[in-house]
Image 1 (spheres, rainbow, N blue to C red):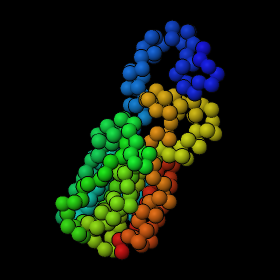
Image 2: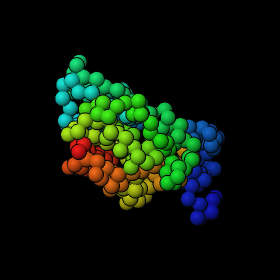
Image 3: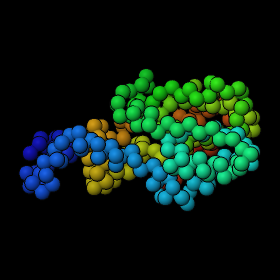
Image 4: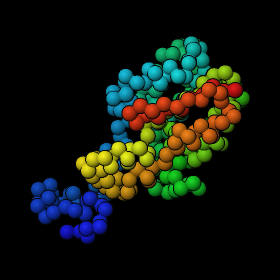
Length: 243
C-alpha cells in the first residue's frame, strides 16, 4: 500500500487487482504506450464525429470563396476532414497548401522538454518563409495552436502572407486549465484523468502547452480587425480579418 500522500493512482493497485488483470499492468512501458494512445489518438473521432454539428460554423468563419488560395497548418488534416472541407469551399480553381504537423507534434510532446516559456511540445513555426507577402487569401491553423513557441512571432508571419481584408482562423480541441477544473468537479473524472496522465509519464494537463484566447488576442493586436473568440465543448476558436 502506498503512502497516503502518493498522487499517482497507478501505485494504488491491490494484490487482487494484479491477480485479476495480470502482471502486465505493472509494465511501465506498456502502460505508457496505451495511456498515450488514449490521450492522443482521438482527433479524427472528435473532429469528424463528435464535433460534426459545430464544424460548419467553424469553417464559415473563414469566409472562403471559390478560387481562394489557402494555407492550412494542422494535425491530421486529411483524417480530421480539414482538407476536404476547405477544398469543398474553394472548389477546383482554388489552391490548398496543407501542412500536417501531427507526427512532429506527437514527437515533441512526448519528449516533455520545456521551451523558453516553460511549455511542452512546441517549436518555431517556419512554414511561410518561402512565400511572398499576400500569397494566400486565407490562413487556417486547425489543431495547431498549442505547438508554436511564440504566437507574437508566428501571428505576424502568418498574417504577412495573407491578403488584406481576409480572415485568419485558429481552432483547437484544447486540454487546458478548464479541462482540469471540469475534472475536479467529479472524483471519477479526476481519477481517470490522473490515471491517463500519470500512466503516460506526465502529471496532468499542466504538462501540455496551452495558449488562451486572451493570449491570442494580445498576439494579434494591431494585425487584425474585428477579432473574435468562441468556445464550444472544449473547442476554442480565434479569428480576425487582416488589416
